[in-house]
Image (cartoon, rainbow, N blue to C red; front, top):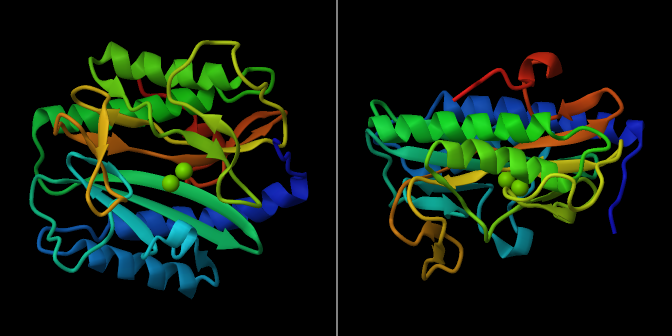
Length: 261
Ligand code: MG
Ligand code: MG
């Protein structure tokens, strides 16, 4: 069942989302060669708790850390580790959830560590643009399929592929709510987007083929062909005035897509 949120609930999510956006920025500014992924986890957790919020991932489905850190061919759900050292040229995806006053928000970014190769830079640009296109399609009276079609269009036009096995989701009272929000689809298909719907839109894009594999830790999902992958995510509320990005530090109008790839 899709759970629509009142304006009051969306304002609570916006407050949590603001803390999450600040957390993402705080982590992005600190990623550097020689750090471990456990360092990123610690930095994020301390920042979230310092703002009076709760890191949502810790214990969610028994996940052991506050953030997911996924490097290069890892798509999502990497477990932070003191043994995993970040290197120059890496793409580090950091996925973070926040709970504030009983409501969840979810956001992810992929950070370039120092100098990265041209294909990796294109991957970041395309995935960011795909998220922007997905958000732009999140208008009332559009459907879930319009979001997926918009994301898929940007990704495939660039020659990359959309991961199928993992999808975006409704979010709010629970971390994962209905509906699922795939990063592929057909316009005008799926649930109708209604004001009050709050969803996480999160393209996961592989340079190579879309197929995935789960590692022996039973969490980390990697591209089956070993190609690099990127992940960007925002929590978005559907409003009468258009999509409202709840996890961005820039205002809504400028958060709308201006990027063309
Ligand atoms: Mg996430
Ligand atoms: Mg999510």
